[in-house]
Image 1 (cartoon, rainbow, N blue to C red):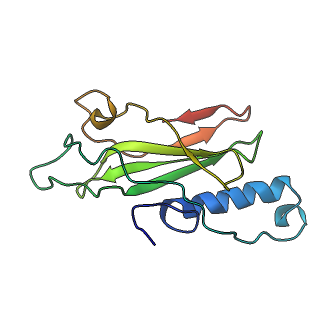
Image 2: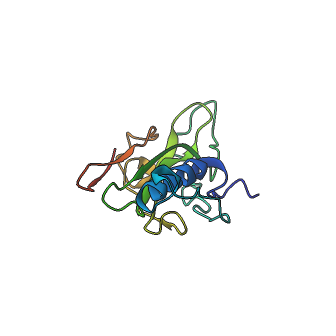
Length: 152
């Protein structure tokens, strides 16, 4: 398995798969509502290589290189008004001594069977944000009960 890619069976998105299964179970007669249990399907590619690897903002005296194309500290949310809509966010290109070059996110509108990368939010200098934010960390995504998505 390519460590620079995230799939629904490995790394960051393993949690996405579990969340998708729980959400789908509750809404479509699966195990959560007394129907048959779900089984894992084939792997689905979610992420690709990072677009931030050439950015040196956030480098420290001890670490001039980050973990390129690594997504860590995932956060996942399922839309309560549409369980087929799932969003995941993670740190992109983590530095060995903390923080990351940016935050990345993906969305599925198919219950996790396909994914699309969302546009980068300019949180960090590497993503067009303020130069004083050389590193970012701890992404969080949540839906409210009306289905509005929040990314903080």
